[in-house]
Each structure stands twice: as C-alpha cells, then as structure tokens.
Length: 318
Image (cartoon, rainbow, N blue to C red):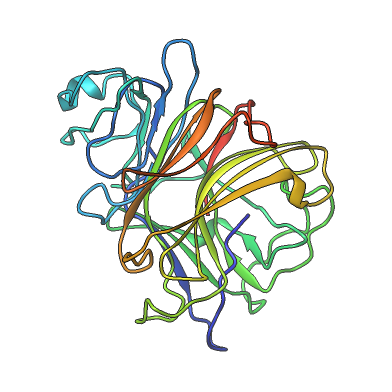
C-alpha cells in the first residue's frame, strides 16, 4: 500500500516498477549468487522466509528464492531440491553463511495470480492513499514482473468499495496500480532479497524527481489487526534515495509516527531508476539488517524503542 506515483503530465502516462527476478527467501544458512529475488530461512531453530530480487540475469529480471543450508555455491540440481517457487534449473544460486535457500521466483513465465499456490494479488486501498491496487496493473514480460501506475479515468471496471486492507469502505482513487503478494502469513525470520528498478517519473528522463514509493516488504494483516512490517523502499525524492522501515502496532485506526522507525540511505553515485540494484534485509530475533548491493546500510536492534516484529508475515511488492 505504498506506491504513490506523481504524474508529471495530464495525460495517462504510466509509471512502471520493474522487477527482473522474483523474491528470494533464505533461512539462516546460505547466499544467493547473482542478484535475484529470494528467501533464505534462518537456520534450524528459526523459521525464516522471504526475499525479492530483480534482474537475476544482468539486472533484467526479478526473482524470489529460498536456499537450503550449503557451503559455497551448490550445483543447480542439488541446491534447488525442495526449493519453492519457480527457480531456474540452469542457474547456480549463491549461498550465505547460516541461511538456507527456500523460495525463488524468476518470473521467466507469467504467473496465474488466481491459481498460483504461492503468489496472488492485493485489492488494497487505504483511505490515506492515492492508489487502489488491481490485478490488471501487474504484468509479466521478458522475464520481469512489471507493476504499472496510471490515472484512473473511471473507464473500465472499477473496484468494489470493500477491501481487505481497510475496515471501512474505500472511496474511489485517482490512481491505479498493483501489488504482488504471497497468499499466506508464512514468512518470518530469514533473508529477503529483491532486484528491482524504481519507476521513471518522467518517461525518458531518470533525473526527474516525483512522489512515489516502490518497495519489497514483509507485512502482516491490516492496520486494524496486528500491524507488523519490515521494508526497503526506493522513493521518488532523489535519484539515490533508499528508505528502511520497521512498523509494529496493534489495533490501530491509522498510521502514527510512534509505530514506525525509519532510516535513510543515500546510494551516492547510483540512480535507482536507471539501473537494477539488489535490495535485501535479514530479519532475525536479534535484529534487522538492511543491504544495498551487498553493502550493509542500516540496522534495527533490540535496544531500539520499537520492538522487532515477531509474527509471521506475507511477502509484498508494490
């Protein structure tokens, strides 16, 4: 529920978030080799779950992966045994110490978001947002997942006013976009990675700033239930802006500053709209650590005021 595109012209230009490979998830025992979307679980005593990454192949696609505990880089067939999602049988995925590859999504073929056992789409819409999420805004092309934002000109089917994201009717929104998510709250401690590229605010010019957030995150329930969230965002305020958030709250009516802890990172010399980059976070009971292209860029520790989220979540991208 975070994509807030700024449309620079009155026409129906579209802003597109591309993810070259799906999420990768690893528990504690292993490392992904190339940038990809993956989930690595966090070790035998923990249940860890999800990571998203964009271009696994030269920055052109997004994938999700989960790894089994391994030392070094395992062979493709051995490393993928028991891995969920749609990993590539020809890829040799990297390993991370103490993480196990568990889930990989390459987006090599379109996903049927109504029948896929892992992935589906959100109907989200918040009263404080500008965007309503719709399945039609999620596209699969050339080994990438693409999320498009466009003006809602009131043509075509309109979403119902009810949404699982709110406890009250959602009024019509001025923008349409999409959100990919897993079906169930199955993901907790682990390493989450995504390789993605942020939307270009002004088509053909990656230096123009705007008002959007593109993100991969772990999220539980609506704000009116158990709000748990860990995310890494690329925002439209600068070409190199990366934001890291933790949210933890119970039974709230609306967002408040005291339920969120945020940190900023300036990827100096990088343009997150022009190129794919690998974004990741490790979520453990002992703390949360964020990475940009393999470099540690932030952390949230037990000593921080906001508690580390402890409930299982979904993996979300919007």
